[in-house]
Image (cartoon, rainbow, N blue to C red; front, side, top):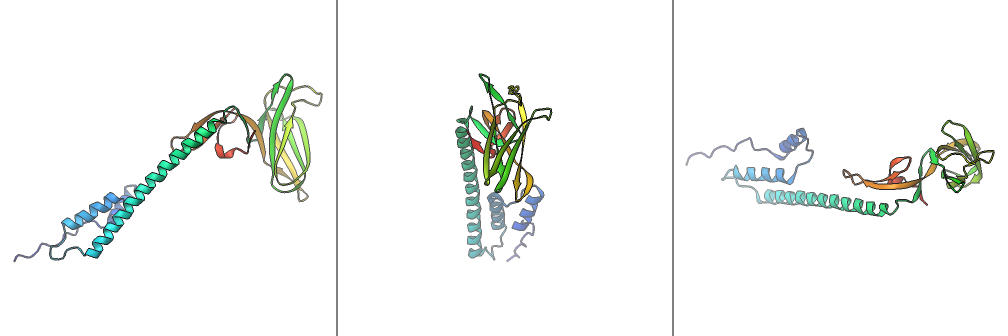
Length: 228
């Protein structure tokens, strides 16, 4: 009987394919890669030394696991898209409403000679005094609001838009800042402005929902501190 041909040594193994995938930009071994390897091994196996059944079962189990993982990943991606769409529909009901979001400005609006500028400050710990300062676009202080002592949390403030002479200032975006005395030391604390939602958008790349706000542009839905 003629001698059996030697088993070719060019059959790629799992490590070689994985290394090839990494060089090509893929970091994982797909089920298609795994199946190609297994079929190549079966075609070029030595008839006198067939595959061990236990090894074959192990490879089949690995292939099944890879297939299940890919299907699970597709399901999760589909679920993420559906959740994002649901969030966009829910957020669309907020169009026209006002929200408070982290900002260093807030708009002054007026109706029938009555002005309103609203906002809030985030007090990180109990404070003996909280002060809000409102400035015009030129940096001139137009109003100082003293809220006194406060516990930790979100503290609202508002301004009627009038200066020291009781004159209503023009509608515009005004700068807001705040300080709090905590533990005997004065420190800057975060401020939030009050804005109206003009529209809602969804990023098709990652499904993130954005609120288009007058004066700020697009902000993440998760940045909303309060819905008014």
